[in-house]
Image (cartoon, rainbow, N blue to C red):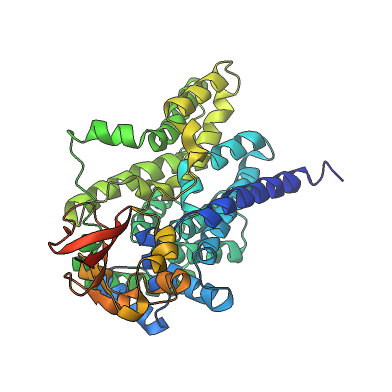
Length: 446
C-alpha cells in the first residue's frame, strides 16, 4: 500500500511544505503598490472590471476571481495573497502529474528541488498579481496538451480542458497571447490536428472577442508597460547581472538540451514528432514573439514575462536529466549554477522587496502623528494614485486617507507620499517633518 501511493504522498508533502513555508511571508510582508492596485481593481463591480480592462489594458480573469474570493473570505492584505499561494501550489501539483505521465515516478527529488527553488515560483506565489494564476493555467494546459496530442487519450474532455486553459491564459495577461500563438504553432508544425471545426468553433469566438479587445486596448498597452525600457547591447551586462538567477534556470535546461540532442544524433533516434521537440519549438517561437511584440507594439523584454515558460523549462530540464544522470559531475555542475546565480540568497526575503516602502508599518503608526479631528491633506505626485490606498488605510488606519487627496501641499497637516523613485515631491517651505518612514512623510506647518 505504501509503495502504491508513494507518488501521491511525496506530492502532498512537497505541496504542503511549499504552502506553509510561503505562508509566513504573507503574515509579515507589506503590500507593494502593484498589489494594492490589484486589491483596488478587485473592489470594482463586474461591469467595471470589463470596462477597465478595455480602458487600461488589464485582463480581467484574475481580478474577477479575486473579487469572488474577497466576497467569501476577509478582504485584507493577508487573504488577498492566498489565491496566489494556492495557484503556486497548484502549479507544482500540475507539473508533478505531467512528469509522471512522461517519466513515470523517476526524478521526484530533482523535480521538487527545481520547483521549490525556482525564484519566480517562490516570489509570485506570495504576490497578489495575475502571474501565479497565469502559470498555473499554463501548467494545466501543458498537462492536457500532453494527454491529448502525445498520449492520444481520445478523451474529448482532455481536448476541451486544453482549449479552456488556453482561453484562461489569454484573458489573464497579455503575454498569454504570445504563449497561445507559440503553443498552437508548435503543434501545427508537428502536424497535430487541433480538433474538428465543430469542437474549435466556441473557442474561435473567444479568440475573436480577444482580438477586438486587443485592438481597442492597443494604445493603452504601450502605456501600461511603459516602465519597461527597450533592451540594448549596452544594457545587456547589467540585465544579466541583475537577473542572473533567472537566467541560470534557463541555462541549465539549454545545456541539458545540448547533451540530449547530441546523444540523439549519435543514436540516430531524432524524432521530429516528439514532446521534447515541441518544447524546443515553444521556447524558440515564444522569444520570436517577444522580439516582434517589442518592435511592433511595446518593449516586452523583462524577466517576469519569462515566468510563463516554467512548464517548458521544467520539461526540458527533465529530458536533459535523462541524458545527464549518468555523468558524475552532474550534481556539481547544478550546485555551481545555483550558487553562481545567487540562489543561496533565495530565502532571505522576509519583507517584500518589490515594494518601495513598508506601507503596513507606516499606516499602523500614522495616528500617532496626525490629528484626525484637525483634518489633513494627503499629497501624491501622480493622479494615478488617487484612491490607491483606500482599502489599506481603512484596514490599518480606520480612515480613508484618499478622501483628502491633493496634488499640492496645503493645510496644517500633510501626509506626503512619494511612491516613484523619480520626480519626487520636495518638502515645501514653511513646513517641517515630524515623522518620516521610507518614502512616506508627515509634515506640519511651522
